[in-house]
Image (cartoon, rainbow, N blue to C red; front, side):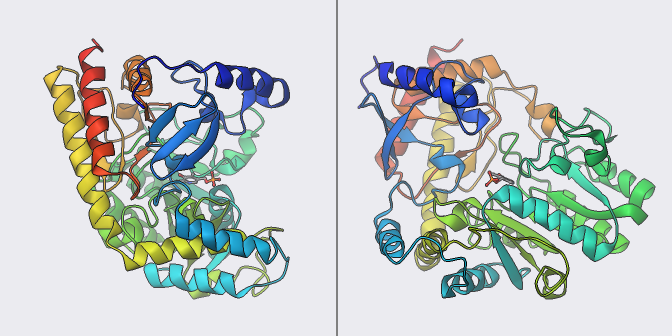
Amino acid sequence: MNSNIKHFSHSEELFEQAQRYLPGGVDSPVRAFKAVGGTPLFIKRGQGSRLYDEDGNEFIDYVCSWGPLILGHAQPRIVRAVKKAVERGSSFGCPTELETTLARMVCEAMPSIEMARFVSSGTEAAMSAIRLARAFTGKNKVVKFAGCYHGHSDGLLAKAGSGMATLGIPSSPGVPAALTSDTLVAPYNDPEAAEQLFKEFAPDIAAVIVEPVAGNMGVVLPRPEFLEHLRSLTRQSGALLIFDEVITGFRVAYGGAQSLYNISPDLTCLGKIIGGGFPIGAYGGRKNIMEMVAPSGSVYQAGTLAGNPVATTAGIETLSILKESKVYDELERKSSHLAKGITEAASEARVDIQLPRLGSMFTIFFTKNIVTDYETAAKADTRLYAKFFHQMLAQSIYLPPSQFEAAFVSSAHTNSDIQATVEAAEKAFSSLL
Ligand SMILES: *Cc1c(COP(=O)(O)O)cnc(C)c1O
């Protein structure tokens, strides 16, 4: 690896063909490299910390499938377990013991979850948690925060006007204003703005949904008092607090962000890591709330492939490995080494960056100001990021192809991977300005 002149002709050809049959050539927008320019890599295989593209290039991967692959690509124990599972049949449409096993593991990891329901994506988890919160409280309005992403369901596709909290305006054509009119948007990390919304709308607020550590505007760390304030506002008004831990669950700690910040939400959304690289999502919480879900209760929610035996097998294996080893200490050690190296390299080259990080999730923001919310994140220099991205790519380092996404370190990343990445960053920063 590390040949500096790379050819991407196979990826270019495949992207051409893909665009004929798939809108934009992809099945999820950010894969298309629109934010950084150039051709997306078409991937042939992954192994450990490495991605191999169709042109035979090898990369150290810091996207890790956007979060699920905390143990790296094709982890041998997961591959073995999944092969066996597939041989027994890939889907039954009947209950399996696997679902109970994975649900028990989730409940043991996060005591705020007494019962869980598996779905097939994080989008479904958040959408269903909101439905349940509305049914439980008999109220309709939902508070979300600008820059937080909770999947692409209609009601949650509202971002914000900047500055003051605003009523939800749909951020995609095709979402009727009526469907986001009950979505209230406040700035992240701003307890006063949230309090203001409660002053005005408390009797109608069913839930507050938040990424306890934001990952979808790039990584933005919460001020602890922000999360605490959300907990007390919801408790006082009878609204539910929903932590969207689709990224942070089993990422920042085995017990998720809720264990680190010691806050117990009413409902939690999970996905990504709990499927070990297979499609999954889950929502869970207190028993008296969860028992309202059909068939024990009347809140309808279903799924043909929900709790799929292959995905739950991969999830069980992943959580078992995370639980029995010192993965999180190791991830912290490697990630802090990486963050320190990158920060020093930037400073040496006089490039202004901010590097918010919690454990193995981080973002390199090209800005000199501290990033605390969507507004400050959006001030980052996206052109500089794009340039840096391509300089790193040329040196065999694959970072998220957008300034506003989290990068991830996996347990498969070696010390020499980290060292190689820091050295690449030194070169990239020094030729940036
Ligand atoms: C990825 C993500 C989702 C959506 O999950 P999908 O499986 O892509 O539908 C929801 N919430 C957060 C915080 C996420 O990071």
